[in-house]
Each structure stands twice: as C-alpha cells, then as structure tokens.
Length: 393
Image 1 (cartoon, helix red, strand yellow):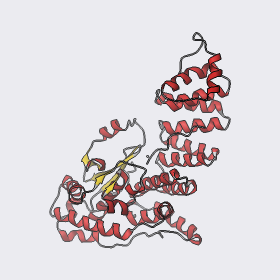
Image 2 (tube, one colour; image 1 turned 90 degrees about the vertical axis):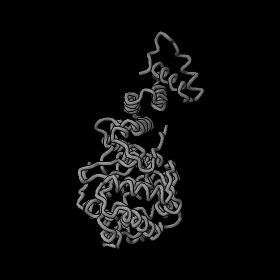
Image 3 (cartoon, rainbow, N blue to C red; image 1 turned 90 degrees about the horizontal axis):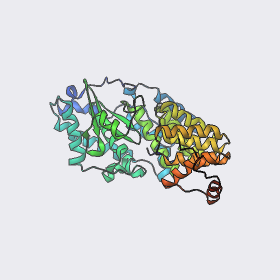
Image 4 (spheres, rainbow, N blue to C red; image 1 turned 180 degrees about the vertical axis):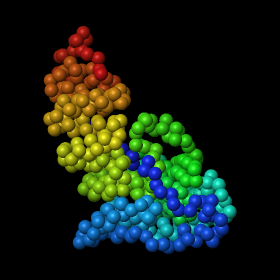
C-alpha cells in the first residue's frame, strides 16, 4: 500500500471589536491595558488522568467562545501542553514567552505613540522583530524548535507558524487587529480592520504580499478553502494540527490523533486536520477510519491530491480496487504528471489482471522515477503489443 507524502503543516469573518491601532496607540500609557494581566480562560498544561474529561469539556467550551473572548497564548499552551510534553519531555516555558512578548510589545508601542496609520503599525512590528530583535525565518516545517514559542523566542528563529504566532500575540497585546491566514503548507499574518487588509509574509521579514500572489504561488483554485482570514481559534487549530504532524512523524499516532481531534474543535474547516488524521489511521492499519477522514478532507478541498491519492491506496488495500482506480484517475485530472497516481494505477490494474491497462501507466511512472517489482514487469512484458496498448489517461 502506497502511503503518500504527509503534508507539513494546511472566512469566517472574526469580530474585530477591540479598539483599532489608530485609536489605541495614542500614548504609551494607553498600551498598559493590553500588556497587563487580564482574566483568561485557563487550561491545565498537563491534564491528570482523572481530569481528562473535565479538560476536554473545558476545551470544547473555549472552542465555542466568540473569538474576541479567547486568550491566544493561555489557550494554546493549555491545548498543546500534553503534546509538547510527549514530544520534548518538558513543558513550555510560558513565563519566558509572556515576558519577552510584553517587552517587545512595549518597544512597538513606544515607536507608535500617536500613530494612526495601519501600515505604520505593521512596519513597527516588523522592525521590532526582524531588525531590533534579529528574528530570522527558518523554512524547516518539521522541526518543533521552529514553532514551539519558547524555543522560537530563545533561538530567535522560527518557521512561518512560529513567527506568525508572534505577530498574533503582539497584536492581541497592542489592540492591533492581526489575524492569520492559511494556504497549503504555509501560514502568514494578516492585518484586517479599519477597512484595510494587509498580508504580512512572515517568511520574508514581514513583506506585504497580495492575495493573488499567494494564489499563484500555492496554486490555489477558485472555491478552495484557503486565504480566508482566520481568528485566534482557527489559528490554534492550525498549530495543533502541525504539532500532531510532528508527533506522527515520530510514530506517536495515538497522541497525534488526540491533537487532530482538538484541532477539529478549533478549526473544523481546515482540510489538513482530516488528511493528517487519515494518515495516522492508515499507519495504524485502521482503513475504515482512514477512508472516512480522507473523505472529510476532500469534502473541503476536492483538489487535495495527496488525500485523494491516499484514499485510492487505502481503497485498493481493502479490496475495493475499482473505487481506488477512480480516485487515482481523479488525481490525474488534477495533476496529469503525478507519479504516485501513475504508479498506483499501474499496480491497481495489474492486481485485477488488466495488464494492458497497467502497461502505459507503468511506463509513464517509470519515466518519472518510480520502480516496480521485477516479477510484475516480467508479466507485463509478455502482454506488450504496441498496437493494442491504450495510451495512459
């Protein structure tokens, strides 16, 4: 059974009823409210076994709150706490994160006294993080050091997820309407409020990029569930999904699935949550559960080739070869040059004795670098007849 690539880390309009930057940052003193402690919805970082049910109920309650009532970091640290502990053997140094973000927020606020222009606010955060503090972008998505926030702050390095969460946390402290956005395998920060939208590409020191740039760069088709503005809850879902993927790569599938269930609470419209869960179920040999998760992912993003390819492979492994072939063919409609779909089709046709149908897909897949069992190739060689072999679809 072919297990396709595990993706790295995939508009409900949030209610922006906090004061906007041009009305908040009128004086240094005006920022005190956003930097001081305020009541937050707390979660235990590591739930005791007897408290698991209460922990889950509390998490579900938070996921139903209006976005402006959710405190970003306390909620994130609580929801991710057990996963972080399983991954690293330690808990997040939340005190370090809060202390350093408060310090950076003061730096930003001091430079914005009297400022009334959203781009000045974005520029001030960019300057504080990338110039003054020296934060750098590290593109490695699978390294938890790049998105566990205490490590991001200590190392002053982060991937798109880690750096975007710094922006969101600073925005929450300063009353600046910063949100997130997600495209396949990548996220970034977004200023949205006061009639303006500014995309902030955290992988390029906060450079402004248009929606069209993201759509072209990440090949986002019309109607796909990406580029929406995501509030704090949905971005927490993105984070939990990414943490789960790291655990899955280390073979901790049950813990990964727990995080995917939590991610679904916070971000039910994110296709990657279900795709990643499907991968974990598939690795555990739970084919029915994997199929259900892949179908959920495809209901949100029909063009998600990895989910459709894994669905095809899982269906074939269950003896549902015709259904699997249909899924592989749909992958090739999305991307005719997909080698794993070609390889999967060749093996599926071969398994049901449709050797002439298998040959062109086998040939094309081998041209693309795929390999096949020599015994399969010997059988196909006996059925070669250039005049009767159909071209690959």
